[in-house]
Length: 527
Image (cartoon, rainbow, N blue to C red):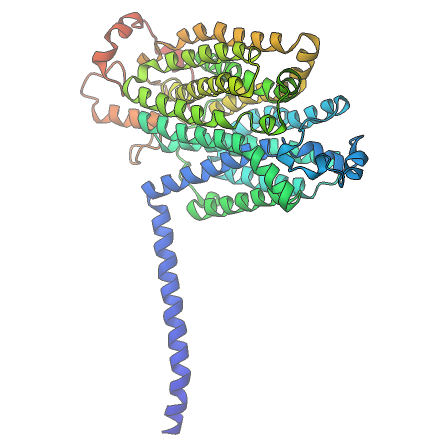
């Protein structure tokens, strides 16, 4: 009796632990299976990519109000001692950071310009390699690499003590962006294969990019002022780490064999010489030049021309977030109804950007300046939202539905503008004037708009027939494969001239483009 009564208390805790362990195991399996469910996984991946894009653009812009004081605190700014000694006399040191002048003396302009441009320069150099790497290994591993590099870059920013370390952190961020941005956008294009869904998904991603760029300066300034110089970067580092962990839980990148039987992507150098892709890339570069060139120059011009307050200089671009989101929404809605007019939406955006750029230098108050800046961001939203899905469509119908290289080309287009802006814009203003800078940028956008007429008939292109017969037993993994599977199901019937679009709405376009040859894409075989 004593032995049995002594064993009972020992058995109960053991039984409780076993039950708890079994319950935890079941919960874990349920969570894992839920994350692997395709529809739910696609939504989670969308969230992960949007957070990654948000982080990258916040880190890019968060140093705008911080970097002059950051450099001054390191002792590299010639007025550092004066700002410290005047801290108790009601000087700038007693003001919130968002209310202080943000741009340093002229002898610091070059140093800060190079620091701002270093990210885009390295991103420009790495993108051709990252695009090829993404095509070879898929989208998950490069996205994880990009998040890890951005996490490391953000930590270096937080603990930097000299200009060289800041430069290394900024350059390292460019390396992370080359992987995270390109693989993230390519992943969205691959997961959302239906055209209207893809337009909406890429539009949401662009909204996160805009939000990150515009909210980062006030976010960084407030935290820098009230929580210390490290806090903005530590917050971003934690979010980057959490995003990477969520990616590991959603997809197992290092055990994923889903792309083993996928076709080999088209080399990036072949995509670069494609005339249609080249036209889209040129439009993406041209539309971003006003934003990239105005960001480092507009604050000084506002101070000299309209005697702007510091808060006006700090919040210059924030109101433009709303027309940008509006532009994304309008373009997605129009693309759903009239998908064959994507080129027109891009051309209209370029014309709006051109007209708005010419109006900037005529403004004499902050209230007046809001309108052309909102017009620039609205036009950029039209161009990006219309042309980013067009790149995926061109790859689908002319090459292979592997998107790493084509979106690396898009990232190169952005990087060209943002690499030149911080270095070249100041020199142009110094040599020719701020008015001439804006007129030149406006003229470039207006003149490029008619070039998009080249894209007006791409809706009638037929898918390439040069691929080998694969994926017979697998569900389609991209728009290109979906088209091919539909062809296999209906091989007894005559193929439609324009896959995925209503033929009756394109009759006039078809008559103009009947001569399109399949030889354009027959040279690109799988290997």
